[in-house]
Image (cartoon, rainbow, N blue to C red; front, side, top):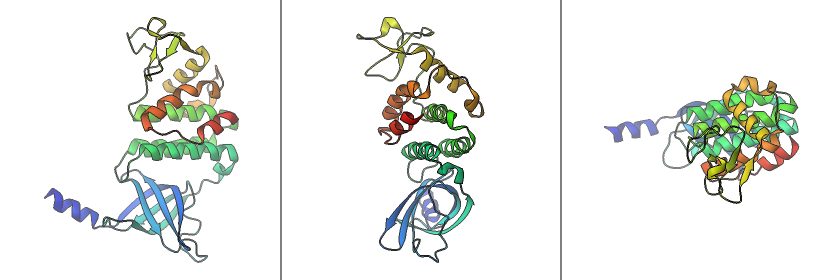
Length: 255
């Protein structure tokens, strides 16, 4: 029964709301489009004739657009993108720094989202994060991105305890140390030599972002610049996704 139900499901077209993550040119007139969706994970389809001036896809499948889309049935190969209706165009994200931050967030969510397997929390994080990046001040972009990275790590079950030693459980206070072979933070007693201390300001910022809602991030006091606190989440994300986001360093150099 399960196999029959699965075949029937694959034989139907899939109607979804999604965010356009990638577009790749295919031959002369078409494009391959990848969308992140809430209920079906990452879906990829061929948009035939998308380059033609009279294409119904024109202006709809741009990067980060939110669309209502219909993908052809899954027959074991590349689906077709049969229809795309524009729901939301995020023009304010075209400013250079916002675009860089939004591109980094989209890449992280793509790393975390498997093909055609739903991860609603990742989709919600992407949409909510794009909303925040549209509205926040330019000065707040760095800490908003850090907050989103911490949320993604939590969704993936890969966020270390920011308050207690990973080795003994003692409260860290303002004195925390990194481990080279493990993502957790440790106290002075369990820090391997040579000890690598985490700056108190950087740790305070990460704790504050983790403890507050996303709506509060743009207005939080900044005990340390976002770029100073960026090293820890970078290591945690690399361990969790087995990828190194190529835009991250450029982003925090500008924040």
